[in-house]
Amino acid sequence: MTRPPSTLPAAGVAVAIALGLLAQAATAATPEEQRLRTRALAATCAQCHGPDGRAVEGEAMIRLAGRDQNYLLTQLMAFRSGQRPATIMHQITKGYSPEQLEAIAEYFSKVK
Image (cartoon, rainbow, N blue to C red; front, side, top):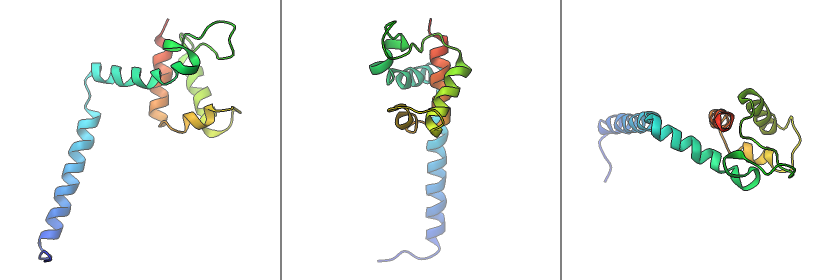
């Protein structure tokens, strides 16, 4: 059984409103929720760069903790665009949005 044409636009509007509310809820995070999301993003770097970006001195991977935020973001974006050669970072950075990379750079810049 098909619905009358008059109900289809209303259903589309309802779906659009629901999607809008979901998007708004996703962006309306408390500061603590945002901090935890950013920390979770940064935790994905631990396998290579150490916990909280504190790589072991003298090892192949660089320390991220305490580095300048602009430097980190510039490097992440260069990996993402392919401008900076890498073995795997160009692939990893493509999995993040520019906003997520910015949050990661800010996070590591504040770790001492």
